[in-house]
Image: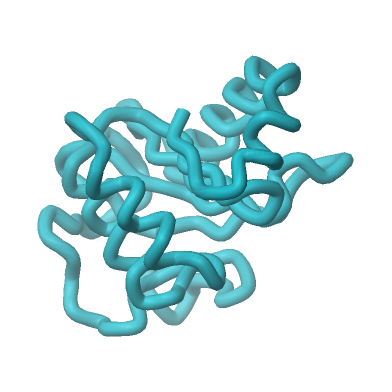
Length: 146
């Protein structure tokens, strides 16, 4: 998908247009990507903002997410959220929550699957599994990684 065909309301990209390490063309797996969901605990379907690209590894996808958090492309507390990811161990599939405002999902994109379908499915499973913990997440007072 060319940059011109992406819809700005549901895309998130670094403010600086140079590619992130490991960034690859294409939106169909295999690879890794991430998606940001605004108001993840709201009734109904949350508003996703997709990262319309693939990365070769989970570490590269997490690095790109940190880059977008640091430059303010995702949420007003991006730098704080990024610092939580920096302290994290080995990158893998994860969900970074900033209370009730944002949930950023780093997910594997399997062969032949579109990044948006993969991100939506991973988030939906996580949200269902974490429903009983939502108030813990919302009231944490800072970003958490699950």
